[in-house]
Length: 204
Image 1 (tube, rainbow, N blue to C red):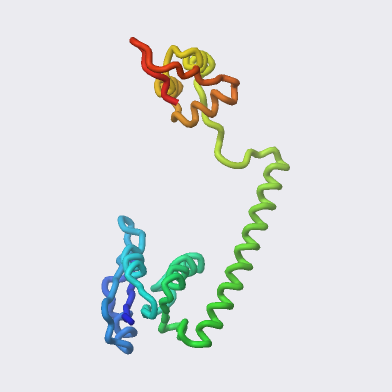
Image 2 (image 1 turned 90 degrees about the vertical axis):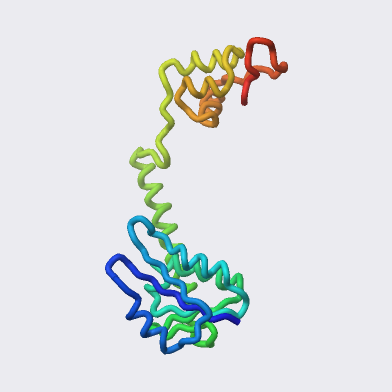
């Protein structure tokens, strides 16, 4: 069983002294992982590296909840990996310890409230979508713009004059978008008759 410490420095902190003092009350860590969040490096790369090394029975200590995660969703996404590996988490400032009955009960309550929040947000999102549709507003990504000569390009492709890659390039679309739009207009790929001299085989 290994014992790890995790520290986070945000953009306003210069050193880990405050967190180190809290973690010194535990001591005896096998390794300490430190993330330094900045504009250039916004992710908790060291935390993920630490999680990747966890094994059953390992314990991770952090000074406080806001030093371990950014929000409740981030907490549960990270702790899901703890549970998959049968590892434990201790947050000193909150006196939260998943090894204890009280800690497990707190975790259960947190999961309940997280689920309620998810259901509430999901319902609000559905209501917002229905309200927007009722007002005639489009939901989702805007339609892909196509050039004025798109039908002509499709005709050239469908008749085998140009291959799929060339047709997509002339239309200014990705291949998948071109094929989808062409199919919506009723154009079909030319039959595959094998490569012919002087003409590339259609790439679909």
